[in-house]
Length: 495
Ligand SMILES: Nc1ncnc2c1ncn2[C@@H]1O[C@H](COP(=O)(O)OP(=O)(O)O)[C@@H](O)[C@H]1O
Ligand SMILES: O=P(O)(O)OC[C@H](O)CO
Image (cartoon, protein in one colour):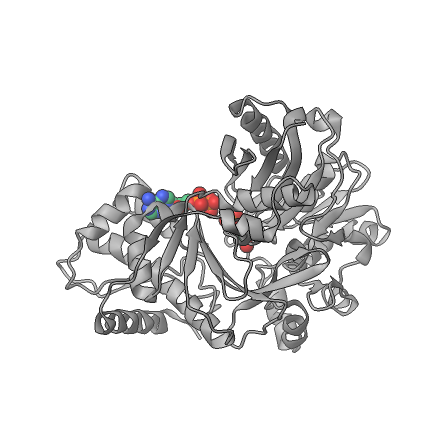
């Protein structure tokens, strides 16, 4: 075995596998998009076999790209789209329903009913989350209630629940291991993040039988060996974390006060709050950033559903651009005297507003408004939403320290957007050299567990910045722009 580490990054729209060498360099990569299923308005599903097929294929592509064999891989780390829910038959390994994706809103009524019964306080105190369809718990209940015979079979122990990490682990180990890590467990609505255990009161509330649940381990742990019949060799799987948590690790945000924000389809900002579990008074989430050596490190999280998706809308919906990378140069040409705002509530608004019924709106249009102003409004909407998250974080967490935001994800390729982000935040924005931070975080967990890569301090020292975007906007201009944004949001909210 060499000291190469393989990370599987199973995301919402594509699956990636990346081979890293001992210097954290990407030596090979495979990526495949897969089909999104929208059976009804507000429903989003994935075929579990697509998730599995693209995982195995991208793993092979990454090895071929690196000119390596599976036996050269010392450890595997898994990172995944979070909350997406699968239930499968323990005997056959076959899922009993399509995966219900995190974006799916079908359990909104159940969440509203539970809220009306006053359940949200207990749920938030124990899980750090909100009663929103985003999380796994109500999706599990939905499958058990809608697939014939599922509830009885779940109670008999014949079925297994897992987020995507668990499902992949089960398949990669040939059905030998049913486990997850604390970060993924912390997104289910069933896991008590203070006690570090599945919670009977929550299981009763959501009517989920305990026999369904995986074993919860540290993020860096022994998760078993791959089945040679599946991937060609027995390789240790030694790290698992939800993708936003893995990005926090890949960005080496180990100290309280450090934060990262990932700009893909959506945007997810995590602020490390250390051993302290900080409850949010501003509708952020409290979550487990990562768990090492039996000790959870907590984070405050702000989740925004639309970031890069707004750029996709400019491209595919409005045809204002042909490629995402044309957006920054076009925004640069926008008329500075026009105050056009886009509130991108295409699927409602996430943190800190949590308004599922709000829909997107444009404000400030005049006859002079053209593509450049609309594109600028879309890019700026991502920055404004980040400002709202960071503002909520500052009010929730008084741990002090100067704000520096480490950024990653597809959108950070846009220099214009990153500069505007620094200007509107009035804080430096750091873009790292290795942009594959999510995969790097998963690889680090596995490599640390196997003693191949350095522990936290050494890894943090090795983190390299590519560019620092320094704030340069005048205070009164920033205040005026932010006031215009908040006015636009107020006019968009439904409650
Ligand atoms: N140069 C760019 N400027 C603005 N947006 C970009 C640019 N490059 C990519 N994007 C956006 O980034 C997103 C892709 O990021 P990625 O991290 O691959 O997303 P995900 O993992 O959620 O699929 C797309 O929504 C795309 O519109
Ligand atoms: O797969 P991504 O990158 O869109 O991330 C999805 C998040 O984990 C959902 O909570």
